[in-house]
Length: 452
Image (tube, rainbow, N blue to C red; front, side, top):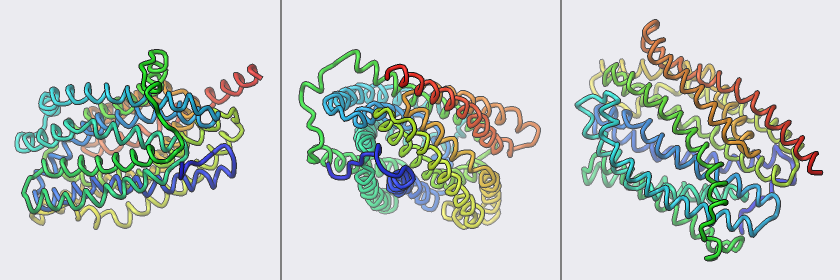
């Protein structure tokens, strides 16, 4: 299949940088979907609508982060099958993953639609924005099957080393999203419903493109036999996927708890916090890209039994991550103010107050952004070696720090306690994951020696 890359041979730095670069561009385009949504909503629907999207941000992360985590967990098994050159098992893993995604998409849709309003009320969402937030959430919940479809196809392609196809897919989606945002929000006046609908339809385009590549690529041909229900295989795939999905859910619940505190600070603080988070999310995409690359690289080399290459790849990824984080911090400090202005409109006094909140958050993030990049890389290496439970446990530490700072530190130092909770979460998770990495790596090497 065109674009497939064997990562068990060649220079680790070259392989990871090339693979991650394509993913990075793709993830930037993917972030542009929400980036453009936020910009258009803030400019054309006002601060209240922007705050409504901000009030749903962690709820959206919980749902779609869980989808991404589960499918990424499935891809670990596929990457190992590819690295060990076991095509038959690779096809069966792909078939089992598709069936599981179908079942899970139904569950997610029903649960999401039922819990939408109660959760918004629990989060103390202000009365003037709860209606718009509910419309936005329910629209996205109705299309969660589209997200499952795209993410499992993209996860399979990354597992076999193809980062080009997901790049093209999300690039097409970004262009589609911009056009549909302009059409639905500005021309047809569909409000936040139009913004959510544009996101879903653009992701559907991505899924269709990935499906065509998988079907026509010639690398694997999934038959009916590969789509049969095999309990043992399904449990094994869920054992990899569910901890990664729960990892994002745990992180998301921490964010939800923080959001409930943020909502209590009023619409202006919510708007400034939301605008800064959008830029933060865009600059975080490189870290996400490195994590995808490290999972695929580690999975393939672990499948081939070459843990020496796993170690070399980890070192190369850490160097790339730290250098990239410094560049991203420079962007926050230099261009943070003008970028945040793109999201905001209204009276000058309100605008300046909102900007001050957002820029303060960005300055704090910029000083410690390297911690976030190392977190993504080290966690991905542990996951790629087949252990997804310990990285999930690190999310509990992040939850503890974010929630603790939001509820208790804010009482001592004010609103900035929310910002410092993010940094504290990164630091504690990094320390825990480094210890986990040493344990998992040594254990895998010992198992390999025994088998030899």
